[in-house]
Image 1 (spheres, helix red, strand yellow):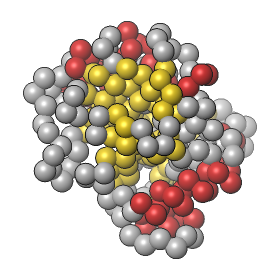
Image 2: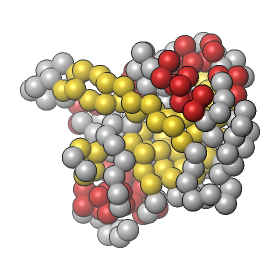
Image 3: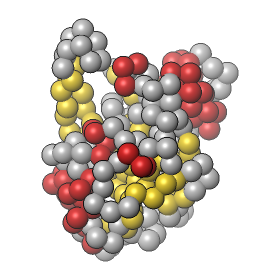
Image 4: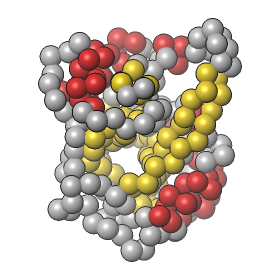
Length: 222
């Protein structure tokens, strides 16, 4: 694999995969909702990391993302799941079967409930996957995690928040297990002031910390 190193680079080599899902009326609100679903392939020193596996139809698009980083599924060494919801693990079996060298990770409280072709390793605050740090950001689910690349200030936020029309928004209450803990996680993320935030739902936005501050009304600038 011809991999670009992230050391000394201002941007982490990332390929984004965007699919679409439909939420029936009554689940996230009175009207049906069409939402994008984003997952990511990230070049790392020891091989490609896939962050979330998206919807059940995402495998081919993830393969294209891996190829765009100069690799194939044999170069995928890690699959990290931000949480257990189906739009984040939908292609797990397909990806894991094609990437036999990849270890699979998820947050500790979520990991026992994820169906997988092989063991899902439980991750906790302070763990790392290659150069990516695990942050416990519970609330959306008990084991929700975010993934931080400190060297470039890049944060993969999962469903801790989303974006809509250029602003940060909370994930739907209907799919959030503990709203109070979710708010604490948002405050913690804002305090980190990451340079980039990559969301599972919604496009990347400029000045993401400022957008989170506007959302939570917190004390953190950026």
